[in-house]
Length: 205
Image 1 (tube, rainbow, N blue to C red):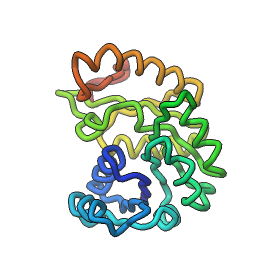
Image 2: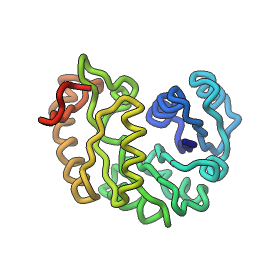
Image 3: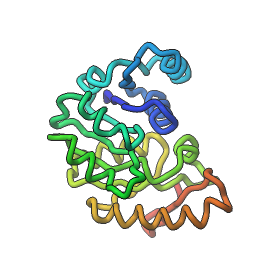
């Protein structure tokens, strides 16, 4: 599966490395594809990774992962070009009171938007295994086919994926996780995760 990742920071770089290791061609969309930073990122990932402009990366990919600062959402989606029928995975966060989910769904015209990979720290994204269990990540979308694709990609990257349903349910999850963060981060720092245990699980995976 061809994957475009818009954003080469901790989240984008970590996810790109995980999927490239599973054999997926990953193209990082960048304003400066030939920069030293991008060359170093490609060297750290290996032959399944490449760089291109944002528009070029989107054009050749089935899945587009948005992993940029919230202030960059509008700009990169304008650069992306035609997103019709693309699966756009929104991993962005806004800190100004607006909903990043609503903002991306408003701007990504015609795309099948999935909210995912934003409910954990990048440290847990880089190493989702905690003893015998792996970290739970929450996701939401109104498009079932797109959700199934992202569930598979999340599992391939080592996560326990939980489908919360639609946007309203995800908004409640985000509020709860923020409350957890304010209490737990002073004690555990950034390298901790949530795991949802279900009765149907015979054993942790």
